[in-house]
Length: 353
Image 1: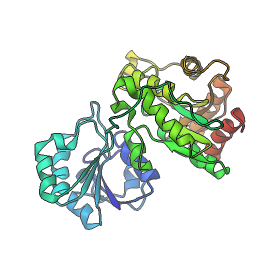
Image 2: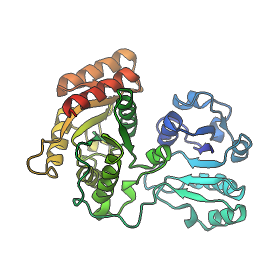
Image 3: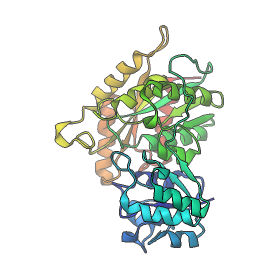
Image 4: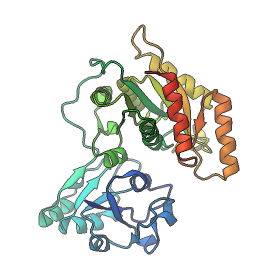
């Protein structure tokens, strides 16, 4: 399988979250990024990852490089397929290329795209399509001895998936059996499975999280669940709470973008809280689900995203986060394995075998 990423007009750090995640972590080969406004560049020039992956002007060029799958690599508020993407999607489908779609709008809801797929005999993988038989949460206990970690956020899009994947890699380096549980479209594309909890009917979000965490616990001693949204985000808090209570974590890692000061999409109308307050908020909400007699679920580390900062300022922000919360803090991307290992070690010390 060879994948091309569609990011027409949006292949930049602020707008291509899915593309960046796939370029950094996917186990399959990415042969091209489609964005006519940046054609001729290398992916790393545009988003900082994906060195050696060319940006091309159109789908035909990507197919010429061997692409058998076209993945939509961006997301927009509301989850609609951008009109500017439809010609590229139609071209891919009529040429028999499979489309992976992580947006809320389904590809075949567009009659023209459905017709293009019929002409080309192409298929579509809807990454956000949840199972139809999900349970209500609170009825299944995971395997005794398995430990569940949930990444939680000060806001949406602060690096919860990244922190989760880096922690899993660090735990494995330490000889632990660790499993990543994908709960969003990008994580599902990378991991090959999971449930996009923001597409699940509200009554079943906790059940979906519980199902995935318990199933993963049969295969691993550490289950690292990818967080979504934030408890203080006015638009996404419901998904966050359902995931928190369904996953029922033993420990949490708080994720934060170092220079973000207000809730995504709300500007100064909704300022972020202090890191110390987020620790309290998440521990309090987790306790509502914790069975009597169990140790409280605690936030035990802070994962920072310092991508746009100088080295000196980034280190200062990491040190400030550690001092404010009294917890180990790291940027697992900037610091590499050293930072990720610091987070993983905090988990091991908090919940020993």
